[in-house]
Amino acid sequence: MAEIVVKIGDAGAGADQYKDGDIVDVFNSNRALFHRTQHVCNMKRFRNGSYIISGSPTEIMLKNSMQYKFERVSRTEVKRTDIVARTTDTITYADTNVHFLARAADNKFATFGSLNNEVYYDGNFNLTPAVIGAIWDKLEATTSEVRTDYNTWVFTDRILKSFLCICVDDFDDAEAGRLCEGEYDKPLMTGGVLTKNRLRTVARKNRVDWRALNLATESDIEDRTKIVDVRNRQQVLADIKITK
Image (cartoon, rainbow, N blue to C red):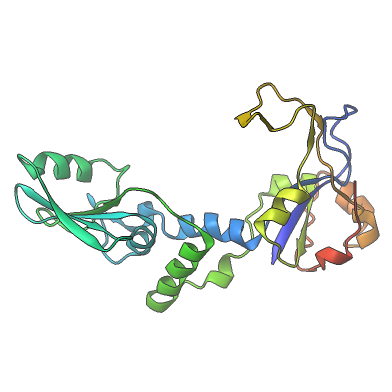
């Protein structure tokens, strides 16, 4: 399942402004689950004093997405495990208290375990669709969370008053990029380098004739004071008339 966000009415007269029917944004299941996974596993939900609860969704996510696991084994030694390479080594400190106590006291970091038995994860953060799938396999096996509850985006009332959010069959990331691309006066890359000072000449290339879908009365959809949520009426993306 995926969602496309369509502009209702013109944003302005300029060619670079959104026009009625423009596909402003898209949310496929990969993108929705990427963000919702981080919400479900947010460490603020599982903090107990200075530490995050061991075995919590936060640790499940980090254990599957980070490169290294660090464990304090003595006053001077820390065991480092490369989760990807499946290797271990030992790092020596003059005093591990300085490092671990400062880390546990800072709410920006996720430290697990207890005093003198701390554990944390660090290194490259990897949340590819495959990794997210592995995280949810573990979450579903150990918690009441189910990934199918998080396949859609959470839209605010303000968005639902200004845009028409249409539920469609799922599509990949490449199609997501194509559906909501705009046009610019210069190419993205010039000689292998990102082009500077690009100007958008057309807000969006792709447009949906939302009136032809008959998802709700036209007057209700155009009324900016009303919330019109039609996502319970799933459409087939291939059947939607998308123009350029």
